[in-house]
Amino acid sequence: MARDGVSPVYLDGPEEQTQPTLRQRLGAWWSRLYQRHQGPVLVGAGALVTLLLIGAYDLATPDPQRISDWQFMTAVNKVVDERPRAPSIESVAYATVIKSVVRVDGYEDGAEDPAAAKPEGQAEIPAEGKVEEDFHERFTAVGTGVVIDDQGTILTNLHVAGAAKKLRVQFWDGSESEAVIVGARPESDLAIIRPLQLPDELEPATLATSAGLNPGDEVVAVGFPFGIGPSASAGVVSGLGRVLAEDGQPKLQNLIQFDAAANPGNSGGPLVNGDGEVVGIVTAILNPSGLRTFAGIGFAVPIENAAAAAGENPL
Image 1 (cartoon, rainbow, N blue to C red):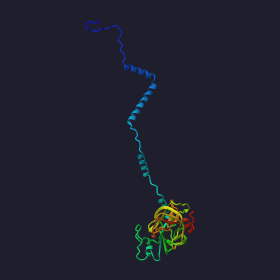
Image 2: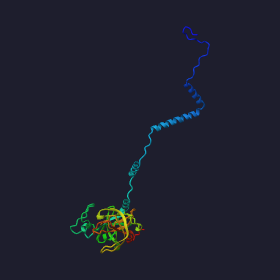
Image 3: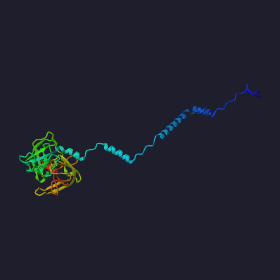
Image 4: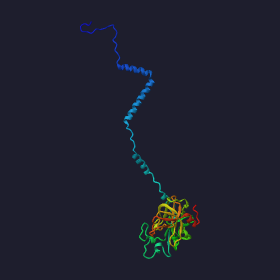
């Protein structure tokens, strides 16, 4: 028993044992588990960490926004608009044949240009791009031709060259030469002329049979309408095998009808297909009003007829 308020003292008895805490028991259990299953535990822990990281990334990353049809088409159109545009069929055709196209001017005796041969009171030929009211009177001796071989043989219309006392041709490079008529086909309104001097670079046109043409095919007329040019106008084949009869003129047969704009000055120029190959020679226009201006109906002699007049075969 305790005496005098002093706690009892056990000299020889066993020491009092302290119970382990929950934390200590869990630590001991984990240590034993780790020692027994070290490999699987590491794998499991790694997988757990990975899952936690993926979950955190998903929470931090917003869902991708759905692209609307309008946004998609806007992006596509922007890419398309930024691409270089391919040249048109008409521009390719023009570029292919232009070096073979010549201007044909007819002169009267003693005249230096077509305007000088006109009756007194008529205006001179205006500068390119300026056309006055009496334009159809001034350009009766101005036409177009096309070079068809290396010797410089030129096809044009007989109504352009036949009445002139002197002919002068101007090539694509600006060089000029007098020319003479070496053949004619009145039944086709065709004249074959040859320049006295050739340019340094002469490029004959490529001829192609018109047998492959169909109504609706694209064609380009190249020439000097009203003396302005060289100019290009585009249209389609309107019909084939047409016949044109004018008072006092030979009947023209087997013509190509087209709707590419043609006016006085286009006569004798090439009608070309989309590849720039000559399929016809522009010969006439039809205007019921009687005016010598284009009303949507033009005619060309097929190149088979035209080339045959010069001894050429387009096939």
